[in-house]
Image (cartoon, rainbow, N blue to C red):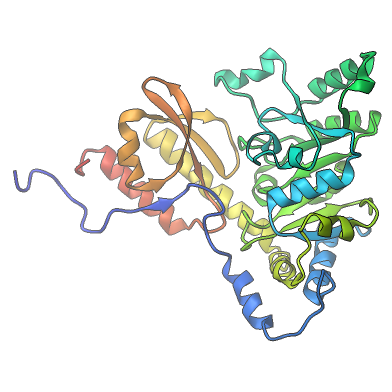
Length: 376
């Protein structure tokens, strides 16, 4: 019957929280492109923008001897770096939910190196009663795996561990503490294994962490990369060998993998902008703050349960199945996994591009909806 349902006077709101790489680039990055567009530059990493960005990254990391290389994307970076560091008979150790093990289409194996999965003990596997792991590689599990490997008389017939891979933050939005990183570093040192940190979302991880900083990573990791694609750039990742410890002829190795940009300024300009005036870390802080605001809306106001306790820009909540379709009218999100017959875990990701206005309007819309004031 006409007038039986209250309606909003504006179009249905859609806030895109599917991922942190579904946007263009921050306006400061784009402006830097335009301002420098007509300037001629050198190629293959010798342009002044890449040189300036390297200097800024060394300063931010407190690592004056660091070697910095710019690549285009995360999977390309992981495959190139891991293949360049490992010997032909070596593999890379990681946890079961690691990006290289789950979401890179076997890119590491395609280079001829096995991904060696370190599984957690049962107590750690059931993280906080959620039925899922915490996404971390724990030092105790890593040490136990290595002890077992080297105690095996047939070890020479197996793929030899050649490096250790973790992500910060993890694929589940969780964070390593400084002490956990130190423990991993100690195990890696004891077994002479380089520790490699995938920092695709590094801006958000550092923003959410109370004790992990770029200088700390430079101390504890042998290699890490600073993600740009998910953190305000159109594309690009900055690989850091903080101790000047890159494999020999690294530029040639990068080119062999089809990862050497002739027009190197494309990434150099972006990191030059991102590391000017603290922009990179500022973007991470803004995204995390809005993620916490989203968490307040979902948990405290709408009554959804967290699926994973994440302090970063990736937020996971358990949504009743009958509410999924209505929620999709307002938010773009990713279905993560079923929880039971009536509930589904979903991921909501804020980013450098998420705005205060979007979250404020979303709060108003969903609270209005939950109060029964709108037609579902």
